[in-house]
Amino acid sequence: MDHQNILSPTLADIYLQQGYIETAIGIYDELIRKEPSNDVYRQRRAALKKELKAKGKTTGFKKVLKKKIW
Image (tube, rainbow, N blue to C red; front, side, top):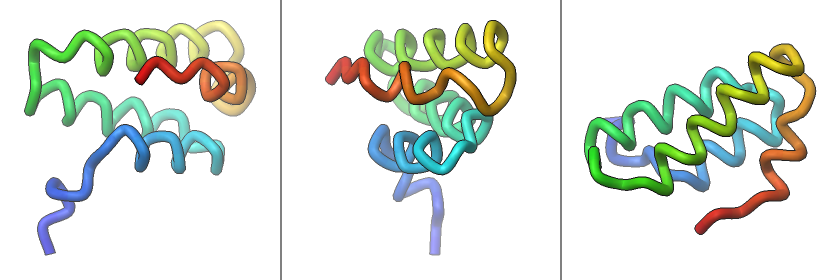
């Protein structure tokens, strides 16, 4: 099975809910490679990276989850 076909913002949110922010960022990296002009993906990834840097690897992601941008 090709895992690239199941990448989606929803999958990224599932990883975030489980505390895997780095994995969620990686999913957005892949989504941006597929759709380089998608500003929503870029904004979401930027927000996740900011949270990761500011709060550490496991805190703060719930705040990002509350801000649905799509």
